[in-house]
Image 1 (cartoon, rainbow, N blue to C red):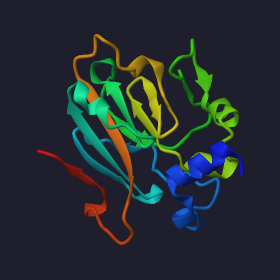
Image 2: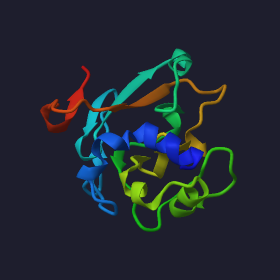
Image 3: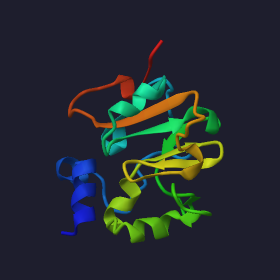
Image 4: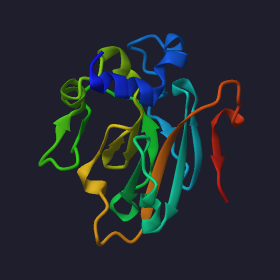
Length: 170
């Protein structure tokens, strides 16, 4: 198993639930699941919870491969999470221009059977995070960033119902 595949498998914890989702299925409904900001959003078919926090620069202090921090002012509502569609493109951070999501997955050596199970975080302008893999360049934090958004993917505990989905922090 290639290093990228091992990391992806660990990140998505496929060993627990991949049998429940047939490769090639698109498990999240179109156009996607609305993202609660701030709050918790359940991605039940994928087995994840997304925790969204708004705050200051300190949000970037505790990042791992399951979280990312964005310049909230560079994003445009509405926010939602979906899985891939034909023709998806995004601008990977550190790259000029856009790239086809399919080509990105090939370059990262993401196995075909996992590609429809990777959450894509979107705003009105398109994909801003390929969950756990790469952030879009337009939403990167800079010295000028005033409002920070931190998104964290967590493995949903088996048997736990979250109001079929979504909780908002008030």
